[in-house]
Length: 270
Image 1: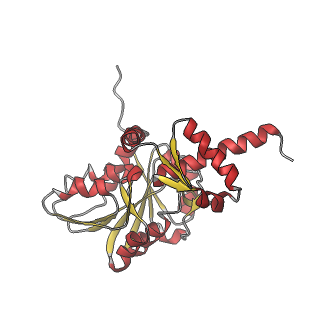
Image 2: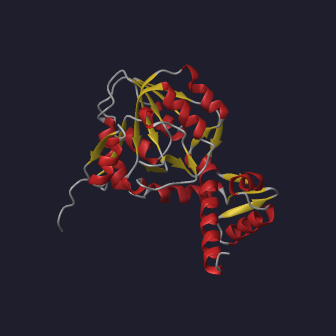
Image 3: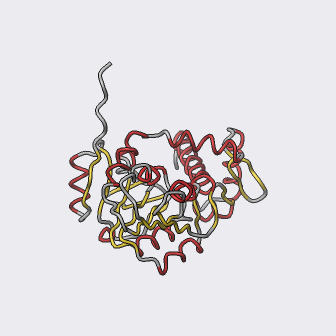
């Protein structure tokens, strides 16, 4: 029997995971939560009531959603500031691996978006993406052809998802994929707070000759709820920042993953 303090810690951790799921997809049903956590509907409804009381979600019959589009947009902009320098450095290094004439798949996410800010050297490019913001950013550039997948729109990540998004990649052949992840661990692989994008990410990997995972060092040796069922042989590069340790580099390279470390800019002395 767990102590009251242990039970409270478990409850807090569960509510954090539920909030991660809602932030990823924009909404969640009680049925999905019962399947994920194996707990009663009454317990999970209580969790959602508390998250609503704390101002994170709005409950509806059978589930909950993030509070409002306007408030979500503000939260998303705040999230974009997290590890901003690291993501910009990763974006610059990743962009150096893109050549004129490439066909490239861009996953959605703040780090993949940072890559698109560093493509001034590119004049011809074909882009396939699930990211609506990336399509808007690159769509007006001469010489860049954009294919935006269909599927269900997810406001929190400005992306499309679901079966239709995954099926879009069935006939796509790309030289390079830049794949985002919530967490990455040499022992447990890539993992995410929601399973809705798993099929899409697997379809992307299947469509690309070379796969680059882009992840800032804060995501390394962390684990989220849903693992990507993918062998390390399908991941060719990890592009991260200088916060990665030598031991972590060795662990990934022992798996056959080449680690590329993006240096952070030197800060000028005041």
